[in-house]
Image (tube, rainbow, N blue to C red):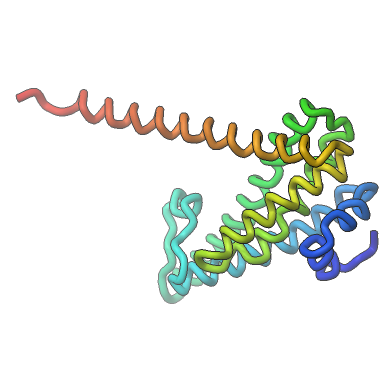
Length: 201
């Protein structure tokens, strides 16, 4: 497939089934090049919106102890936030693709991990293109990407639409349950530690 990145974006947004079929035999390098471009676009627009204080700073970024400021420090922090968002977008996509592949495999997908990763990288197109827009961007982009993930898994793993949908839903729901349980355990441990350190009256 020799389409340009803008042409690929339009294809995956409006003709996803055909676009996924066209990249079925594509190696990983064009896929990573494409995802890198849209991930950088998302990170740049997200960082600009954060700097303008139109949207809150990403929780992952605040975990690094950075926040927008003016002057030279602000410029350096802008670059730092941009790098963190860009890197975490790549890491999240790769990890979710690997996690999703587990469920795709259990439901009959035998085309290999790379095909599931491609369905994830390309499926995230709507979220990365409009996800930086305040309020509606993340919601619309997230739902749109969810649909693309199902289509991509169906086309690239050769499984039915129902099985693809079940794989995507299970991957998201179980991941959410695990993350919620971990946060709950950490919260309870922190509360318990706070109680035990209180001086007795």
